[in-house]
Image 1 (cartoon, helix red, strand yellow):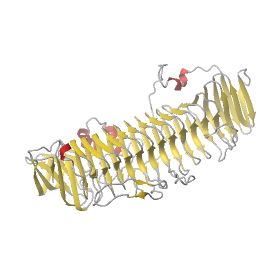
Image 2 (cartoon, one colour):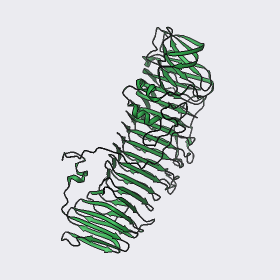
Image 3 (tube, helix red, strand yellow):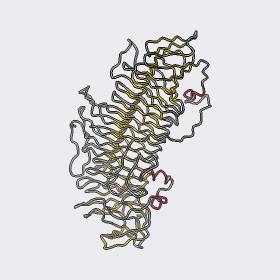
Image 4 (cartoon, one colour):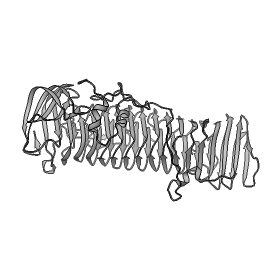
Length: 606
């Protein structure tokens, strides 16, 4: 709709100073990974719409350069198998009904077999090379020292529990041998030993450090795909595929750390999580895709739980790489974080399409542009893109969120503070695109927020805009492009347009950059041009939907007290730099009529 499409290179190269145009190609057009698809390659995304934005599995490998940690004082030094010497090496060969170990005897190691089930008791460090195939077998180990399990062309199913089961609190190096394909599967029900945990197809009481460029395929029928009672680290150049109908894809008590590699996780269990940790989640590289399709887990009727791509009970951090999360079940979330959530870099793609589960008590959304009142109910689960109970910080990277499930489908939500200092954020949501309970500050970045039935940007507390570029579109009255209820709204910088049925007004005593409010009507694709009296263009707005009552809040560093400005209808625009429905500094605008002339003498002109 609206103007002709403009290629990314010409549109963004000047506007997004400091941003990599290759990253923008990945966000907005068909990318090299094939994860994002917005239709025509190299074209801008218009209006609502990230409509064609999709997330799918991509099993292609990544070519990643990895530097082996050699600093013995580094926190991750011990997670590199290259830093440990194994003088004891055993080859374990599986066949249906049998398993053999070579060499068979050693004073420091005891091997017990039961058909194709092997139990190892180890008192020293050792490497175990697992190969062969068995439909009823397992590898179980008790060890006083750290050890390596190398998967070297292994196909192993344990109908009664874990395929790989470490009952040692020592570190397990899980190496997937180069050039091999390995498949592991657990049972739908587990036969457990008293006082022993067994929580997944691959389970360890200790840390798990995954490496190797071979392919690892995991099927989890009873419990998790990979589980550790401590932490899990995944290194670069790994390739892991997990299909879980049991509980979750990856589960760790202390932390999940993704340094690189490719991980595709499909979870169909009710309330299942792609990756979940009682501690923190950190991704520094690689490509992780988690798709959940299950509904709400109601086994605890007082605390129903929806699915999530990533669940972190502590801190969530994305520093780099690509994280793709899609949830289609009721109440499904992209990320659910109980403490702080940080996006510092990388590409973050989230889609939720499930509806809200249950109903909330409380006042909910009030008419007249009053904003969102807090609701609470232990029997409801709302779909969210990024949800943090603590503060939420976006300092860089590319964030793309689409939430289409109806009421409660918010894109980026914090129960406390949202701070945006950089990055490119694009959100298209049924409910609020960006919502903070306590306060919100925007000092940088490029933000597009299109809410089909609520506010584009909504702070239930204070709001400060001091930098960046923002285009926020809310629904018709009483919804707003930019909403902060009746709280303090400070404008000290930045270029922004909020368009909706209504708007919050900046608090003039807290502003150092003037803002303008225009009220009228508009139709989809209408162009409105704001220019200085000398004809210099400030920006051109493309109206993203039809409004009988349209309210536009706009501000720019080019709007200054003592100057005059003209708002006009326009029929065409060229030049300048375009970010969605906003073109800044157009070189040529064809105008059809004048709507309003402004003489700026205060911090807010209506």
